Amino acid sequence: MVNNLELEDYFNVVNALMDGSSNPATLSFEIHWAPGTSHFKVRDDAFGVAGQFVRNTATMAWAVSSAGQSYVSDPENTSASVSGQVGHERNGAFFP
Image (tube, rainbow, N blue to C red; front, side):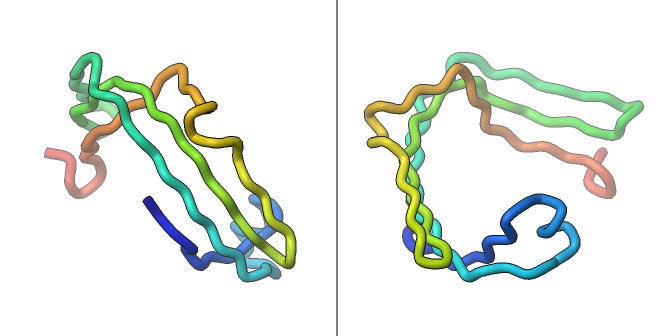
């Protein structure tokens, strides 16, 4: 659970990548992960990446405020996911 995380609202991806103008914003969210359904490993020497992951699903509710506007998701018990995964990845200097 995250409550009232302070961040910047850049309005769009291009503006954010250019560190353009922004408004202060706050974000709150709560995510519940279901138990994993399967474990799997990935290793690609050509791309220099390896990892261990767990397939599962999750539900989430969120709220954000920026420039006097507020946006709120439906309650968490109404959300559903098709798939999700959690894991640990190694790449770059950390690739064995």
